[in-house]
Length: 486
Ligand SMILES: [Cu+2]
Image (cartoon, rainbow, N blue to C red; front, side, top):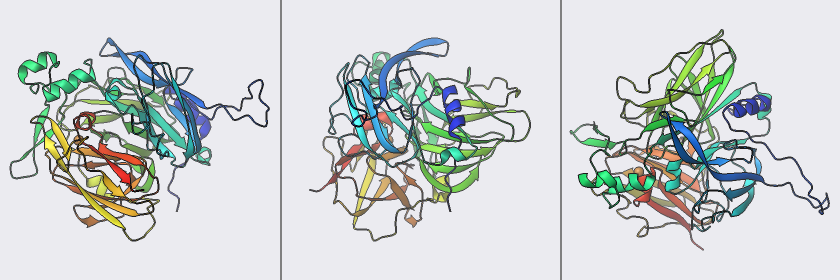
């Protein structure tokens, strides 16, 4: 049975234009001096650029990933990824294609192995594009904090046949401080400014939440941000998507925040999860869904008949702050939604994860190789580790081409970690030792003191990062590589 939802390409593009995300295969062009027979279509141009947005009534200089006409992000058909990345910012940069499976060398992590792109330079990327779905792209450095990130939607053949309106939203956490300042504030390093006088910690650590018994407290939200954004906007001035009464909407939601996990709350609406991290799942109905950093979720909603307006919220876990956007029919009236709730949202958990079933699971076969990784570290000293080691002193996880690999990830720290594997999609095959045919993903949430086993086929040789998608955990050490033996 096919669970992949379809949508009208015409309406998708109209909707994408509304959110500032427009893209399609570039038209065939035949440059002068080249024969039409020999000509290749020009690559889609994507620019790392600087732009100004308004946050809390103040201008903010941020980065962006823009097409030449200024629209943000890309929508490309599955088939081939032919993109020219141009660096138009004032520093070296590079872009990781999160959710795609490029060959090693085109993954966009600086020095793994491609060096950062010099100011004014460009790289051409060209590889088979076989992972349709809701993906995204972002700097794999502190520049991610400054919004060097955008949606990367890969459409499947036939998606234009269903009458379904896509709504693409990228969430983010925003600070007027530089990421270097935020990081220094966490580690207590010099340069933390006012934070240094407080040992670098006070004011930065958000909340300690009651733990799961035994009186142990978990750490949550280690940075206090100035705002939480949905497509660059706060709830003071949210994006409004015009929808049709009784229509079907496909939310394509991306958590592009660097250090914030959210609960997606549909409010008065209900919907079905139909894909996670771009991969289809058997539909699961609900109103509230977890979305950790790096993850994506596609939710299909059938709207009520008649005029109306509905706010879709993203609630910061363990806190009252929230962001969101509005679905409204042409005459649907809506008022202002406060940017903070009365009560804090709970920490993210694995309840939904345990109920997800891949619509396209890995093929059944024996496991050739098993490995295990322990997540560790804490707020004291702000060091985050895999097997007690930081990046640079890391233990690479060895695999051989052709193997079915299982890796068990155990979180022995008191903070949740979204663990992301590059170059592969994996299937969640056990939670706390309980086997399941769970979702196929590229990023999985590890709450404190929990264990998740992932399985993947070693079919993409290279040295692939495996890390926590909390930017500051990664920056302080929580990363290793899956390394193919030669
Ligand atoms: Cu982490």
